[in-house]
Image (cartoon, rainbow, N blue to C red; front, side, top):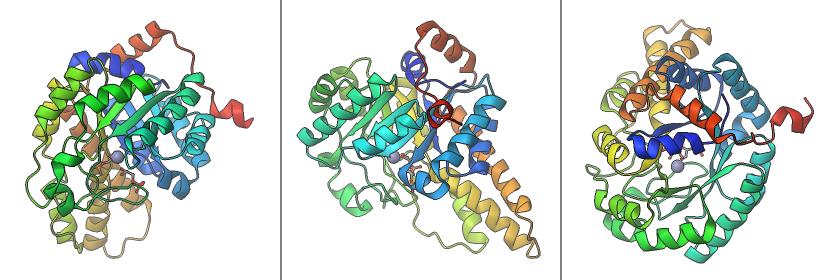
Length: 340
Ligand code: G3H
Ligand code: 13P
Ligand code: ZN
């Protein structure tokens, strides 16, 4: 069932779980994610980056997601814009039927971030769409996502973390629904040079200045060694990878108001490892179904593992009840808008 993230976060904040936000780029990735959520009775956020819109064409992605909604009516699904950087993009996403958007002004000054975020909030709320914003800077660099080099990030980490007092002012002046915080996570597969340590004192301080505000963790892939080993065994070359340990993410989710956790890299690794394995062990294989099918299965298993880490397995029915209780109107539907 399509909905905003509001009922998910209402329950997650108090309930010691977080909703996994997984990036979708094509049919197999989306199917792997939704199959896992259906099997584990978990809500999910399907998030679409600017790069994904460009790669797949949003109309194709929307129809794939519509198929998920039809095929799995019991799974609470939110469609989210990941790292939206302009009001124009946010407007497009709202018109495309997203139920949630992120406006990422974290690379601007505090005042510019507030101004940009406020404009996005006014636009989105008028359409019944919820808004996530970001304060503080993450490490790591990915296509279309501004970030910091791992070494520079680790050396100067304190200055990039979210300031709890600023977070309160930002919340009051923008009216956001959730806040992505910099607490030591980083985007991509090459996050750190040494073992990651999340700044739990910082999340706790943000929770104190902003009680009740759902917090979001980006850059939360764990880059599991077994997948890097598979990739390298079957012809890949990915030395020096490093992720956020799953135990630290679990801890943040269970006790620190973290309601949404973004995971993309680990899905990419699962898919790549499986495709490499098929190509390396069956060099004569040329039917895409015989490598994309196993890759979809690998994504499903990776997502199941994440849903347990996030403690969201088994919460779907409760989220649906909460959505019905809120009785909020659905944001405009893509099909109606586009006249299809
Ligand atoms: O944090 C960013 C996501 O992993 C999306 O990456 O811009 O390469 O689609 P992308
Ligand atoms: P990872 O690169 O750690 O998977 O983070 C994804 C993300 O934050 C998407 O917004
Ligand atoms: Zn991100």
